[in-house]
Length: 351
Ligand SMILES: NC(=O)c1ccc[n+]([C@@H]2O[C@H](COP(=O)([O-])OP(=O)(O)OC[C@H]3O[C@@H](n4cnc5c(N)ncnc54)[C@H](OP(=O)(O)O)[C@@H]3O)[C@@H](O)[C@H]2O)c1
Image (tube, rainbow, N blue to C red; front, side, top):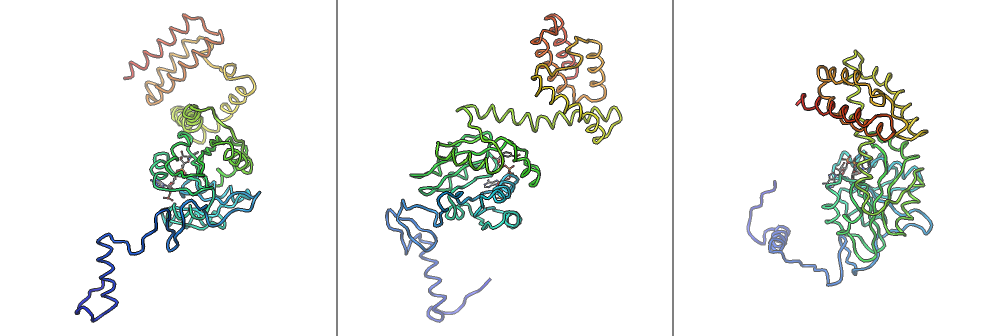
């Protein structure tokens, strides 16, 4: 820390800094921006002029900026750049993540502040956690001609409205991919589905962007996004929870995780293949379709004794299987209802 001493006039530089500090503390702006104008660092512009200061060539992809150095931001940055949709800028609040992302996303400029990135690009992608999207958008301001999208599967594009100004557009671009690892996610984008939102002009651009990634764009019916996303969560996280339960039961049978995956993996793949070929209902097999009480009782007993944590999941799946088997005409109504009661009682005893 620098300690000043001496009288006023001894050091003009110190006096000037002291005066500026006092003016600053009093909230006086010595260089005010005229009404109808705004400032970017040292430059003052009239409001309503189009940003950014650089533009893509007509017919070329837009200048893209990605906010957030997490799983999705990084993988999209890599995938878009490789697909010939160069990412002009990235922003990450964390210096290490910022450096790592810049290394991976070839040619991108790196910023700590999202608003600084907005000065440089035409299409802003917010790849931040769902809960952070609305507060982040509320602190940002788009310029005429720009668009902003987020990558959430749960939220609509309207959460970005606070960042809008005249002549701007907002949308969403949700890849149905589990972003666990950058390279695996980049590969998985090929053949994936991407749910897009936006008015027609932006949706056309986003569909082209999905196409460049080797993915297929879909436009969801208004109001259906939460259900679409809940299904995706069951297909990814829900399926992992099911796998975890399978592995736990495999341990009871003396298998380690790799052993369980080796043994039950082909059964899972075969079931998925059957569902694709025959339909979901026709793919159902197992003791419930046969009304086999003895096997059901043996399963419930062993689960209670050796894997009580799996019981609720087994019961929930079995109740759904009963409904499917009933719908298929395999189970008489009385058999179905006794099985359902047996399952509910097993759960109640476990509590
Ligand atoms: N993960 C998936 O499989 C997946 C799949 C499809 C869609 N999505 C969606 O994609 C979005 C991002 O998910 P993700 O998995 O990439 O998340 P993530 O790995 O947790 O990364 C999000 C990044 O956002 C930044 N961030 C976090 N909190 C913030 C805040 N309060 N304000 C500003 N920035 C913040 C952080 O980057 P910095 O610290 O670098 O700034 C963080 O690394 C979410 O909407 C998610 O629903 C995820």
